[in-house]
Every structure is written in C-alpha cells, then in structure tokens.
Image (cartoon, rainbow over all chains, first blue to last red; front, side, top):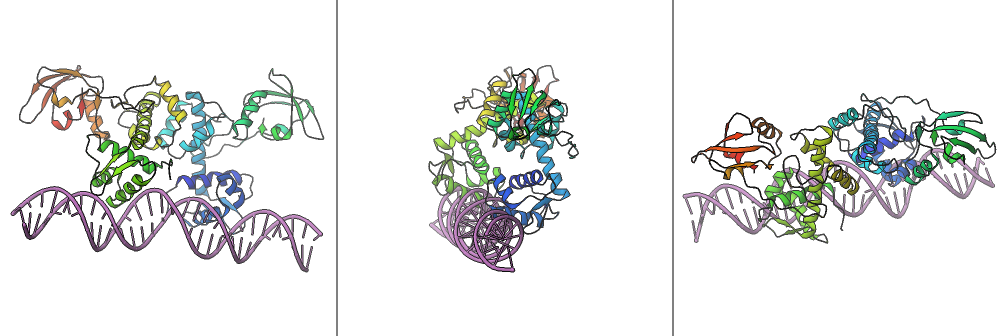
Length: 220
Length: 220
DNA sequence: AAATATTTTTAGTCTAAGCTAAATTTTATT
DNA sequence: AATAAAATTTAGCTTAGACTAAAAATATTT
C-alpha cells in the first residue's frame, strides 16, 4: 500500500499543498471545488491518503487536511514538474504564458526523472516559471519568496513584477495588455484609500488604474 | 459510450494495429503478451471495444481482432504522437534512440493536438522517427513503406539502412556498434546460403558477419 | 478419428475513484 | 441557547480495468 502515486493522488497532494500554504488545513469543500469532484469523494480520498503508510496527509474529521513530510515531497515533485514544463513549453515551443497550464497539468504526471533533469539542464536550472512562481529545487525544497503583493504599495513606491498568481487565460491576457508581466517596472502614481485602486505606470505603457482583484494577484 | 479513449484503450488499439498489420487478426494471447495483462482481460476489453459505438474493433469469438476505420484512426493518432515524440526527444533533448521508447510511451497519451502540431512543425514534419519507422501524416494516413529486409540482399547488393525494427535498448545499442543505423550505407560482401548470414561492409566500419535475427529486423 | 494440448472465454472478485442521498457535525444567526 | 445554514461524513452504488479459476472451443498429434 505504498509508492503508487496515481495521477489523481498527485492532483490531491498538489491542491492540498496550495490550499494549506497559509498554515490552515485545506478544507474538504475547497479541495472538491479545485479538483472538480464531489465533496464526498474528497473525504474518501483523504481517509485513504491518511491511512496509507507512509501517510501522505494528516487528516482529522471535519478539520481538513495538511501534508506529511512524505506528502509534501510528493507534492513538490509534481509542482517542480509542472513549473519546469511550463517554462520549457514557453521557451522551446513558443507557447504563451496563458496557454501552458493545461498542457503542463497533463504532462506533469508522466515525465521521468530523467526527462525532468534534461529540461532543467537545458533551461539552465531556472528559479521561476513563466508566471514567476518559484520552482522547487532538484532536492525538493521550495525556495522562499520575498515578494509582496502590488496591493501593499503606496503612492511613490515602485517595484519589479516578480510573480502573477492565477491560471485563467483571460485574466493573464488582460494583465499582459496592461504590461503587468514578470520583469515589468511598476511605479505607483496614486493610491485610492476607499477602493484600494492603484494608478500605475508600467514600463512605458500608458498609466492605468487597477483594483484589488488585480493588485492582490501581482507580486513585486 | 463514445469518444473517451483511455490510455488503456489507446494501448490496445496500438497493439492491435501492429499485430494485424500483416492482414491476420491480432490474437488474444499475443495481445495479452504485448500488453502485459492476462488473456481474460484482453477478451473483456475486446468485447467492450467491439460494442461501443462507433465500434473500434471487429471481434468474433476465438478469431481475434482487427480495427475498424475509427479504431485505425485512433491507433494512427497515438502512433503519430509516439513517433513524433521519439524524434523530438532525440533531436531536442539529446536522448539516444535506445532511450526514447519508454518516455514516448507515457507521453503519447497526454499531449494535445496543439502540442503535436508544434513539435511536428519544429521538426519540419519529419517522415520517419529515429528508428526509421514511418510517421503517420497529420491527416492520419500511414505512408507506405517500400523498404525490404536486409536479409533479402545477396552478395554484391547494396543499400541504405532505412529502418530498424525493435525497441529493446540492448539490441539497438548492438546495432549501433555495428553501424547499422538509419542512413548507413551497406554493401553485402558475402551471403552464406546455409545459415543466412551476411558479411557486411557498413560505411567505413570493419566488415561484420550478421545472422538472420539481425538482418530480418533491418530494412533498406 | 480420438486424445491431448493450446487458446480463448466465462464467471465471479477486486481496487481505485468517482457518484448521490441521507445523516451528522460544525458554524453562524437570531 | 436555540435554531438555521453550511460543511462534512457515511452508506451504498457505479464504472473501468485488472485478476484467478474453471469451462469451452480450437488446433495438433498420434
């Protein structure tokens, strides 16, 4: 009852990693929504994953799930695959950053460690993927991120876009239209204290006013 | 009950295609051996595949299976994926021809049509993969092969190696040692009528004597 | 042509992973 | 604190795809 990490299990672990990143356990409902399955299915899987040996998740009834050390390693492995693949699809096959997610989601489960090493080497062991997300290292540790949300900047402050959160292609294309992509230089020209809107000068683009829905997803 | 071609089904179709290429239906036992499953499992799957609509295989009890037009299309799609992937792994990631098979076997089921188009274009729409096998075209027809086995050549005849049959890495490395790889120029210096051995001059390699086990698998 | 061997199929089980509907527990609201 | 709402779990069912053991069909040998 060990070592066979099905595609489905890998997906659960990846989402639990993500949802519990803030320290709070991942809830059944949130997992169900992310995975596109019924809540009852999640309960069943969490019970299984906490009973295999070694356990992959820590689960107590009605209290959600977190990952064990083994579970986290497995999650980081998949995440490393995913982010390396995204980087590589963009760099070698001309995918755009809004197109890569789906493809990487399918490939991440089937590539060999050899394949992983080859693309990592070919890309020069990149630190971030096309969205700016940090790529877990080969020994499966997640580098720590010292970025902060654009929403936390105030008038006069500036920064370089490091990371954009979210996988929705339409959202990503919108950001691209504003120039808000990793690497962009951003100057805050005004802050509206009531709605939290920021007026931004992004590189040499025309100035734009963006709301919290965007500034909370962009990190500098 | 249509259109969901699982990985397992794709594997069955691929093997049926291969085993029935000579015109005779693929037998239950041969399929079981190729797929690494029990014969009873094959029977079950053949029944299913012949009952879905549209049917993917033609199956009569005790008489093996052949593909329907739909089944063949599906098989060619997977085979195209496989062979494009092999070509591409060799050309862009430095895999050697004896290493690519396994990786391609896993990737072939998950790549999108978009991915297929991109690598085909990046490779310049190749006609053969690294083993010389023909790659089905984008409209899913298999080009016809005008090669013949090296075993059919006689003293004084010559040819260019076009294709090598077989996926066993050790076998492929052996052939590579002899220079018998796609593109090699071969001259038959002698034919032994009793054992079928050929004495070959391969490019500028030292002459070698090879048996039928090899000359039947190499095509010129 | 009968006997044996091989191949294939049937019948019945198992596991992973999902589902729905109903029951329960926790959280939020009066 | 009682009730309503939301979240979660249980129970029982379904499907794909495997398995084994036994039965049946086909092929081979004497």
